[in-house]
Length: 80
Image (tube, rainbow, N blue to C red; front, top):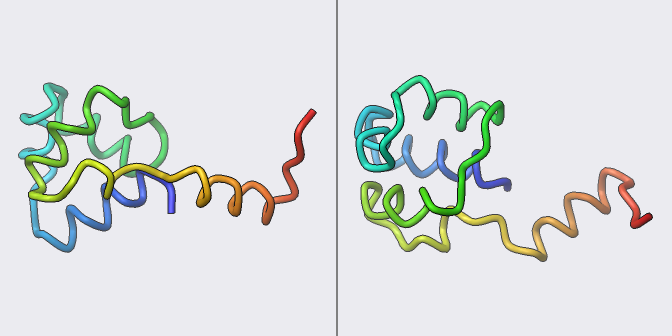
């Protein structure tokens, strides 16, 4: 699961409004909606504050290397 999907899933599970995440990371609520849709990246410097707002460890919002490799392998992406 990619970071934007993790953010959306955890936010939904914890019933945290997008507004709360937006205030925590210092962006408009519309930016959080774009992040969750995958249209805008979740910047690394926003992860700690988003995690605090959600009440979870920051690592819960990060796509781990093993997940990335499995996802790209499944998609047929190879190194150049």
